[in-house]
Amino acid sequence: MQKATYLKFWVMPVGGYETSRIIGEEISSYEKMHPGIKIDCSVIPWSLAWKKIVTAAKSRQLPDLFLIGNTWTRTLAAINALADLTKEITDEKFKNSFYPAAWATCEIKNSGKVMALPWSADARMIFYRKDLFEKAGLTARSLDTWDSFTQACLALSELKGKDDNFAGPLGVGDIKDSGLLHEIAPWVWAGGGDFLTPDGFSAAFCSEPAVKGMKYYFDLLDKDIAPIRDRKVPSYPTYDFFVLKRFAMIIAGPFAAPSFIPGFFEAPTSLRDSEDIDKFGVAFLPSGPGGRFSFLGGSNLAISSHSQNKPEAWQFLKFLASKEFQVRQYRSIGLLPSGIEAFASLFYEGTPNQQVLIETYKNYGKSYAQVDMWGSIEFILTGFMGKILDGIKQRRYSGDFLATEARKYAEEVDYLLSL
Image (cartoon, rainbow, N blue to C red; front, side, top):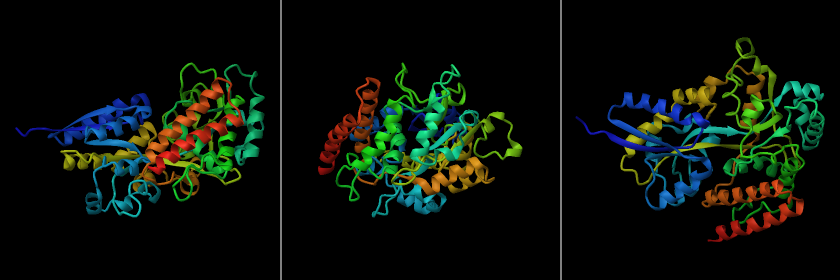
């Protein structure tokens, strides 16, 4: 009997608490098709993933295959954590199978090397409750600019007290992981700022335009327009929004809706079998002084540079990146495909919700600068944003507090970039 090949696979909780079950079912299916392969899958929390991957890379203890945030590729490639997949990808002619924005996060700029394969895509949008908007005399257009967004939030605040279940206009997350940075990035860009200077040599998030964008966002939390102070456990309020209906809006990626309302984006009106679909809408993030932006993120699949099972890991990676797998994952957990064929097979009806999703992804999406140290910079920025959340919860927050902390953390980033 042929000896089985064992692959280790690390994945983050892309399907929330259901991740182990859903990925486990896919692995079981793959193992049946490939009797000589056994896959050991571990689910790693996003808040621990970066440190765990870097630590494992240094000790050459990485799994054969692992998921990474698509902003981490260049840093992990720089520390020799990732296998070079250029030959395999060239042989399979994979490049044209993915959207350019997703592909750019896998290919190391100016080198021609491809170190990962796109898996999922992400773009932030506003989900809103149509009934509360109607009560407040609002529409999606009321969210178009920072000024109109502020007025809309004030109008929605008037609904507090009329419904004991209503917590506030906007639900936001307060978990201190990279998702927090992705929440705030569009506001930094809309303020006219950025995280690094154009040459990538210095921090820029302490500049006046960047601080202006962050201040707009954090002021929403401080003024209880987006309340976080009463939470006993840090969380992201998707359940509170879609099921408990405690907020009028949340800012989230496309993954948020399908888990609660199947068909939210892709189902044409004539085929919708859920009344809830028509109770919720989706809108663009507001435009600020610097324009309108959405964080364009997602995840990539990579193989360890020290894997002893690269051919087998590559075959499993192809399975995970296939059109069929991506369609299944979207329908089960709302993971937005990065593959062109999978995306097109899901979103072809031109529903209003689809149009917002596609226009956000194609016209307003922006990613972070590609620099070798970005993964570590992201870790520092997450610490900075977490410090501001703590200041809000402890009622120590102010514009001066934000600017002072921005300068402190910018010094850390500058030191890192000088090495």
